[in-house]
Every structure is written in structure tokens, then in C-alpha cells.
Length: 320
Image 1 (cartoon, rainbow, N blue to C red):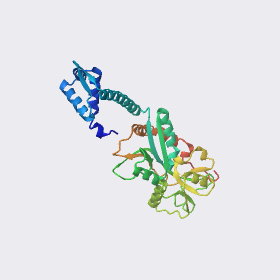
Image 2: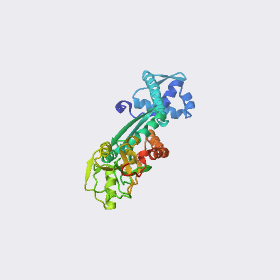
Image 3: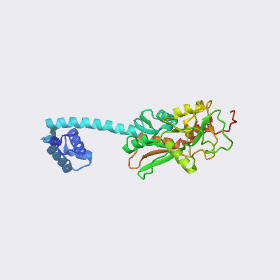
Image 4: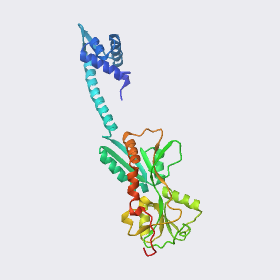
């Protein structure tokens, strides 16, 4: 930034002292203003002149006068003071959330509620610029490893002591079926094992949770189809292609005419959404504010998902 071959080691304190001397045209008056001794001010002036490589002042009677180099440096000091003042104002704006950048990376299923939460947050802080990345769990973990974002939202955070993971919202996984599907009373997953299941791709958090649950129940689903997105799975279930195990957040009232939640023993699979970030990385003001927003408004987010008809398991007759 500075050419040290020309300026040597110049400090902001030296420039502050020089600017006071230039303004007062007197070392003694500058010393009084700065609450320093006169010898201390004189020493700093001498050190600064040596660093610059030019005389900065010359005596005129009992006062001092700036040399050409001194006048140029005084102008530079005033410009630097103005720049620094603007910098401090920008810091104040960041601290007060009047401006800043928020980088968030979320797993695919979080897209059904997280953008709404972001929208409400930005309404409170319109000066915040938001960058939102949506990928499956493997993609978000890769971004986490590379520290590309401020915070990450996922259900299955990595087990790493260097990672901070705070749960803030339930993320239950349930069994979805076409509206007219006739499930046996008190159905178990084993009862449904002969059906075709549409499952998310390996690498997604939902697929990982389903595979772990199947292993715990010792149930195999031989007739399975891997589908790369929740939207495609929803279309497949609605079209009668098969059943699915997905988050309650993945479906809304608009899906109800064609899709319903089955009441299956062992479900829902209870999971939690987590806010994830590195412990050794201080969150920027905007990111920390959004983190606190999610924690403080979790009840509202929970209410929005739990009161939706799509979020409530229900029993239906085979003709329902």
C-alpha cells in the first residue's frame, strides 16, 4: 500500500501529531492540545521527517512554518483523516446492520422455508446484501470445508469439534403417498416394502437419514428409484409412481389435492435443522444477526410448518 523505500516506517500517531503541529503552527500549542510534552512532540516530528526524507517545518521567530514537503504532507493528512472518518462510518453502518453482506449455504430441502426467513430478515435490514447457495448435503459440506459462506443450514452437520452446530427447528421425515393410496391400518414400513419408493440421491441429507433409519429397522426397500430433486419426487408421487420419504417442509397445501402423509409406525423420523459455522471464525455482524434471528423466531417457523395441513399426518379411508 505504501512505498516504504520512500516513506520508511510512518505511523498514524506521527501523522496525527504532525497535523496538530501544522494546524497550530506551534510545537508547544500542539503539545498542549495532544496532552504531550513538547520534547515528545519534537521527537515525533524529527522521526517523521527522517522517515519521509524531507524537512517538514522550519522556524520563523517563535512559530514554525511548513516547508513545501510539510504542506503536501498536511494536505495528505487531511485527506487521510477524511478517508478514515468514512471508514469508521462504514464500520458503524456494518455494526448497526445498515449495510453488509450475508452469505448463506443451505441444503436442498431448506429452500422451502429458509428463503422466507431471509426475506423477513432483509425487510428488517434492507441494506444487507444476501448471497444464497442451495445444494445437496455433499455440496454444502464442500462449501463448508472451503469456508465459502458465513453460515450453513443443514439437518446432519459433520461431527467435528471445530464446527459449531445449533439446532433451531424440527425437520421430521414422513412417508408420502398418492392421495388414493390404500395403506393397511397401523401400517409398518415392512408392510409397505413391496411398494416402489422414490428416494433422494446419495449425498443428500435426506437419503442419508432414510438409509440409517432403514438399517435401524432392518427393513429393505428392493423396489427403489433414485430421483435427484424433491420437486421431481413430488411429481412422481402425485402421478402414482410410488411412495416417498421426505421432510414435512418439502410439501405445502398446494400439494394436498394429489399427495397425503401416511400414518406409519416408526415415523416421523425425528431430525433437527442446524445453523452451522466454524468455531474459530468470528461471524460478520450480518451473519450473526441472521443466526440470532433464526434462533429467536424458531417458534414462528415451527408454527408455520406445523399448522399447515400438509404437515399433519392423517388417516384416510382407502377411497380418500
